[in-house]
Image (cartoon, rainbow, N blue to C red; front, side, top):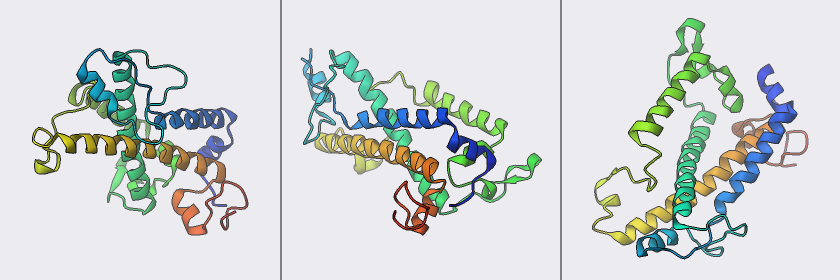
Length: 224
């Protein structure tokens, strides 16, 4: 199999990290579970609950977590946000594994170029602490001010002409909201599977694809 940086080898073999990844995988599976439809107090709430309840499961809440429209609204906001983050993350996996990187230096003081960063999850540990801090600051700005998480409907007024002119085409709004939720659910599973697959095999997405190694078992060459 491909070799990994020392920090990443620790990441791969650490029992704590393996347990954390397993827990993350289980949590991500819940993204495909559309919540059960409680008795809505208003027609608006009932309309919102229909979004994302796709066949064949429809509304699915076997543990009875959703017992009010307010709780549903909160859980749906969390699902939507995580789906958006996962879609961007998986797009980043595709971009980085194709070695499409910025020119120049990530950290001139450390003589570290963008192209020096590993394509897989191990690359996270190669980013200097100051760089990680900058990423967290930008995320906090988005989360608290620019697109605040407290706005549970997730609609920040971004309109792209006729493509999502929901006021004039309400049916398109429902179709696009369903598409966003379903794509987000798939992306959450996809990015989780990508990380778990790399931890188990020690190969990045590109390395697995080049070797035809899509099973987490075996010697890293061929499907099995």
